[in-house]
Structures are given as C-alpha cells and as structure tokens.
Image 1 (cartoon, rainbow, N blue to C red):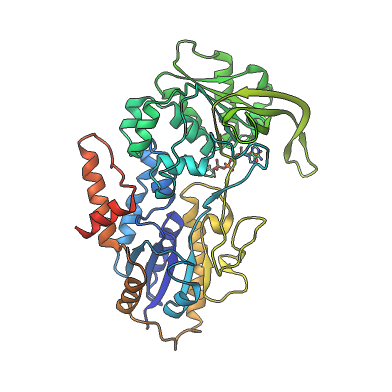
Image 2: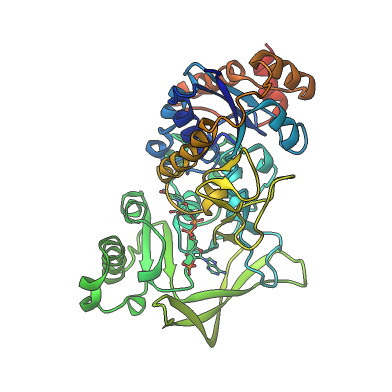
Length: 450
Ligand code: NAP
C-alpha cells in the first residue's frame, strides 16, 4: 500500500500529538512533514509555558520521541501564505492538518488599551520566553505596581513572573534579556483583577497553591470578597479547593514583612486604562465594580454597579484570553477565532483538517490536545481509507525537500533544530539552567550553518 503524506502546519502540542497518531497508522502507512514559521518547534511549550514550570515543559520529551520516528520530518522557517500556499501543499500531500494555535490576544475594547505600558499577555509571555516576534517588546518595569487583567492561569503566570525572586528566575530558561529586565524591575506589587468572583475564577488550584512556596511573596485577598464558607460544600471539588485557598489567605491577612505582594481583586472590570493625554504612558486602571447575576441558563455574569475605583500603576498586562488568526486561503470564523470544522474536518474542504486551539478555541491544558488530535486523525485516516486519492501523484519526500530549499533561504530541518537544541542545552549547563535560548534569526542560522 502506498505511504500517504500528510503536512502538519504548526509544531506545538496539538501538531505533535497529531503526528504521533498518524505515524502509528500502518494501514495506510503515513509519513509526516511538520512545518513551522519559526526555526524551533514545540509551540507554546517553548514560547508560552512559564519558564518556572519546567515539569510542564518536560512534555517536550514526548515530542522528541515522535520526531525521532521514521517518516517524520521538520521544516522550520516555512510560513504558510508567504513561503508556500495551501494549493502548493495540496499538490504535494494527501492531506493538510492546521495546528497553528491562537496567535493573538482577545481585545478588551476599552479606552487606553494600547497606551505605552499596557501589554497583551501574549506579547509579554512571548518576550520573557524568547519568542523571536516579541524580543523587542522591552516593557518598562520601573513602576512599583502592576495590574493584571483576567483571572486565568495566564494571568497567574505573568503576575508570578513579575514577582519571582531573582535566584528562582536565574535557574530557568527565561530569555536572558528578560532575566536582566526582571532583575532591575521595580515591581513589588501585582494586582490581579477578575471580573467575576473567586468561585468563577479560571485559575487551577496547583497554580494558585504554588504562591505559598515563593520566597518573599504574600498573596493578598480582601475577606469581604470571599463568599460564605457555608456554601463551599455545594461547589465542584476543583472550585472548592480554589475558594478554600483564597479564603485561607484572606483570613490569615498579608504577611507584612514580605517584599512582594500579589493581590487578588474580584468583581472588577477594566473600563479604561488611564494616563496623560491620549497616548501618555499608563498611570492606572479605572475599574467598574461588579455584582454577580445568574442568567436563565445558570451562567453567572458580572453586572456593573456603576461604582468606580482607580488602581494606580505603571504597567498593565491584559490576560483575558488568546484568539486565533486567519490563515491565508483557509476558512475562518471571525466570531470564535477558529477554523470551522466537524470533528476536525474543515467545513467545505476536502483533505484539510484542524487540531488544537485553532480548532476548539484557547482552552484546556497541554494534554487536552492529545484527545483533540486523535479525533481529527481518526477522521483523516478514515478518509484516506476510502481511497479517494489512491491514484494521486504525490511527489517523493526528497523532491519536496528540494522544492522547499528553493523557496526558503533559511530552511531549518530536524538536524538544524537538533543543533540549536544541543547548543542551547550546553549553554545552560554552567548556570544550572535547562537551556539558554537563542532568540535572533541570524544567530539561530549561524548555529545551523557552522
Ligand atoms: P482563560 O482561562 O480563559 O482565562 C481568561 C480570563 O480572562 C478569565 O478570568 C475571564 O473571565 C477573563 N476575561 C475575559 N474577557 C474579559 C474581559 N473583557 N474583561 C475582564 N476579564 C475578562 O484563559 P488564559 O488564562 O489565557 O488560559 C488559556 C488556557 O491555557 C486555559 O485553559 C488555561 O488553564 C491554560 N493554561 C494553563 C496553564 C497551566 O496549566 N499551568 C498555564 C497557562 C494557561 P470570565 O471567566 O469572566 O470570562
């Protein structure tokens, strides 16, 4: 039986889980070419997961095993829509899977959102993780207080990174430019604002609990914001644990000797990011004070009471969720920021499939992508089995590589990535760090060409 060829666009967790499931197939056998617009694979595992979470990042070991399997190739510095088109890939592959994640931010749509000193968490996270698109962000960390908008795990990540002790930070693979900026930072207090209450917050308990173990950091919660403990037993277990933790901090009160404070302020929606004039730097965030109301369907929503308060700060990080970006030549639903599909088969298209955040929206943990990718691959393999493409003339793997080399001056293959990886890990050894990231394209290419 002919070995079928599948292109996967995007090399984050969902792309790798899809690759693994495809390479498991023996009937028909499948080979996989994975593309990324960056030189380096692993998507959010490299450029999104907080650097002080090495355990979560260690999932990359699974992706290395998949990459080492026969039939797998990686091609970095290949951008769909710039270097290659959908039509060109369809001429060379039996199927395409889009695994590009959610590459931008959800907007707040409030005045002052783009003032200097107000950053989307997508950019800030990319900056401290050494994502080449964001190395130039250069956030001003001189202010004593920062405000983080949002009550999810990304909000916690950015708040924690701002308050992490220098020694802890220096043991991570945080990009060097960010380590130096954090070391010189004046930020000692971060106010994390959730528009609903502690019960509705999207934090996971493991991430919240971690705050108890960070040297010199005290979590701060106003007891008046906590719901009555009598209602705890009716809460789902995961939420109950969050509420108990937050209540514990509220009852204990802040440790006044701590050098750094992370305050949780609930029932607050930003209505404006304020500063001098229209585009002066951030001086504060104006917050609407909310009450909660249950909809007919039981969803609890925030309702503006009309009351306002302003928190003075010099830095705002907006962590209200990610959003997908349309790919040239691929259907896109602007409302949800995803590619419309049925069980991973893209609507109105043959031979095009989708996995991960660009399929289901920006939610879930890394492992969620395995089930998600399996669903898509099941459909894809079933479609291949119908034999619709049995007579297709798919070029040999070698011909495809030659075509790509002609297209992309800085093409990076698996050997190239392995050279980068080895260099980074070796560079980290002296300082007890997992790696020292290389962030500039010329430097990355220099490592490959030498
Ligand atoms: P998220 O979990 O969806 O949280 C987004 C937060 O922003 C929610 O609190 C949401 O409040 C709030 N929000 C949305 N629109 C808002 C608005 N207009 N004004 C004020 N607040 C607004 O998203 P995320 O934090 O970006 O995380 C994405 C996914 O990655 C999640 O599944 C998360 O668990 C996962 N993740 C996991 C880890 C980890 O496991 N360590 C780390 C990072 C991320 P409402 O609830 O009221 O909408």
